[in-house]
Amino acid sequence: MHQPHAHHAHAHDWVHVLRARALRATAQRVAVLDFLHHHPHSDAEAIFQGIRPALPTVSVQAVHLIVQDLSGNGLVRRISLPDSASARYETRIDDNHHHVQCIACGRIEDIDCAVGEKPCLNPSDTHGMRILEASIVFRGICRDCDTGASERSQTP
Image 1 (cartoon, one colour):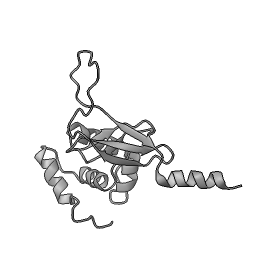
Image 2 (image 1 turned 60 degrees about the vertical axis):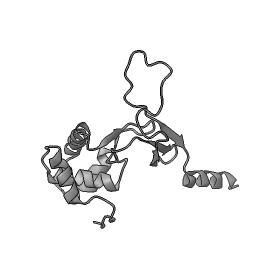
Image 3 (image 1 turned 180 degrees about the vertical axis):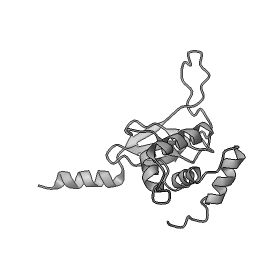
Image 4 (image 1 turned 90 degrees about the vertical axis):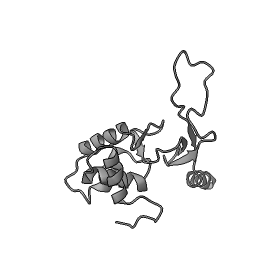
């Protein structure tokens, strides 16, 4: 297991965060939070593959339940993106930010919100609804995929 950088939360911080929400700090919850902190925008399958070496008894179903529980308790953010077959999760929950996604390789990166708070867009008509958030996903082609596509098109 690689050493987290000094500015990243350590496992003991996750224990404190969980207990502050009156949640049991199980090894599985701590492992999921730590994995997501270092691998944002992961789906449940990637989380499962990432924590299984340290927790060989964990199941995919357990990971699904844990991320649902953590997102329901406001500890992780669930992200639904157009080109992702499954929901993604992240621990960056303390701000309003958006995402950019490469339509070729699927890479996802964070983009800071220009306004900073929710909602960052105001609809022309709310149809009587109180707007909680506006979800913005920028879709494009990352430099690696763009370079690869142009190189492939230039070969005879």
